Length: 308
Image (cartoon, rainbow, N blue to C red; front, side, top):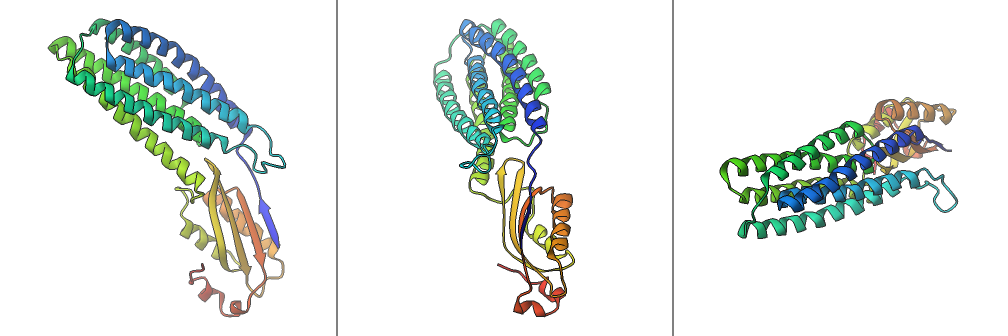
């Protein structure tokens, strides 16, 4: 007997995410242009690095937005799961590009460290302050809790921008009072490190989904034990747990019922209630199987065994 339960994220969540991304895109675009102009006028590499990061964030926001729009397309005969995993591809593109721009910033920072350039600290501080305010507004718009991997990536970029703006302001104040212009190159290198660390974290999540690894927030052993603890279940085998896309875990498993079970439909319903209530797992495909010869032994003993 084969059965399944199926529920995907609410379309309302994607619509809210889309509105937040559009608003954040507008704020980021305005400040990015201001920082490019300010960086060229002041000669600050840190400010230009921050502006470069914000310009890249515009791409990241655009990709995340495009992924949500494409993800709204319904499933068809070719893409039976729909297009939800487009967000994962978008996050992959954004993260790889972020690594590239970080390397470029780091190389330029080394050059500026070896050959410091004069800076217009007043312009540097003014533009960075405006950028900080805009980044804080963007963080408020996006919020802090998302299951969408693309939105998480966009949020990470904006958070990195916020830290970068803080760094530029601190560096500008140090230069203003000490005249030590190499701090600009040092801050640029630190910004590059922040970007790389953030991109590696997103790449790890992307790799887990593409490799169909079990979601990190679900303990596979505990899940299997919970299924085996359901009344009427003898054992579980061929269990697979993966993510269709971020925040959408899925499970498939073969469930052998105990000899006294007459209708495995009720056993399946109890299993689904456990999966949804305890593990928030809304998509499960369960192959219900009649007792095998080895299931003639006591059920309690079988539940202590580890199946392949």
